[in-house]
Length: 221
Image (tube, rainbow, N blue to C red; front, side, top):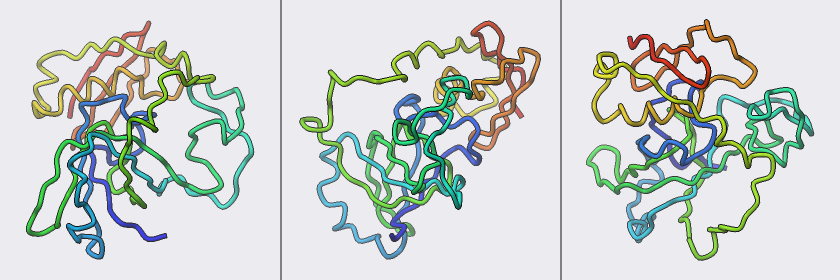
């Protein structure tokens, strides 16, 4: 397969990226097409869609072998489930699928037509294999069952972000990082309330602790 585009996001590393697309709607990213795919005709009509499906490659999670079972982080990292019953990055083919909001389409001189999107769960530099429109009448299933993920909302944290530290971030990034932190970036098996974690976001190092369902930002560098 050819890489048709590259994602540009505020996450230089995997740690802290939302576990699913759409969890942090305030996150904004940009899709820049490779030179061979910068024909504006390839995007004709895309402005009419509010959401897109992004098919992409787990470029930092490629393995030579695979396991039929994996340990989903939201089950504490100890319970095994079938790989095809999860969205684990450790798969026979390292391919990811995300539903994102299309914010705008921009025509640029140097990079051709770029897409500005919201709610993506992709690391900066992620290779994109394909883009398809989200079609509500056939893609939306309100009655769908969520299996073992039904209680994912139970992991939401209260975020205590002191105003003096929050102001070190650009105003347009503040809501996004609060949404990211509320979904508990830590691995589920780490529960040390004294540990200070570090998350790289938008060129800043966000330091925080977690205790009793409250995440407290202690420094922004």
